[in-house]
Image (cartoon, rainbow, N blue to C red; front, side, top):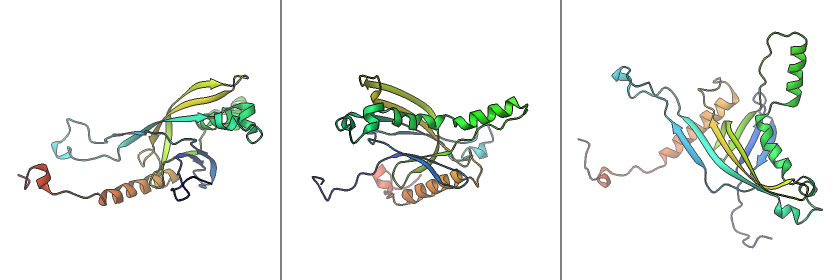
Length: 218
């Protein structure tokens, strides 16, 4: 029983892979620990400088949003009870790392299928499509993303050299309607995120001008 039975349930961030056509969930990867920090940057999409002055205030689309975070994975607690956690005692955190790494790998079956097509003389082979990756950070942020940066620092090992503690740095680009067809599942999720952001902005109080030291706009 928890020491504080009335404390709110901790919601974890994570990554979900879905089939973009059926929305079926292929894999859910919950982060073991929520990162202390999450860095986001917005690159504004506007008309290039030097154009018509009447267009200087025009936006060409949603900004390009990128997200960076560092994930910690640790098998120490699991290794204390090897009977209850056979994967940890046998493989350390290899399974958790592999679950993240395979996001950026095409499926082995796809590679072999394309090789068979190439061997049979097929001239044009369609690039392999990966599942749609969603970054979940509370119910207010369900974002279609593409992983752009991925690095792993393994910090501790068991006697068999299985990693038992690691830090994973992830960089992601949010996929918008500029990146996907408008009728794509990812575009629908992005538009929902966009609408939610506008609704949240509407709940932010707008202060009076006098807090800025002025009483009117000149």
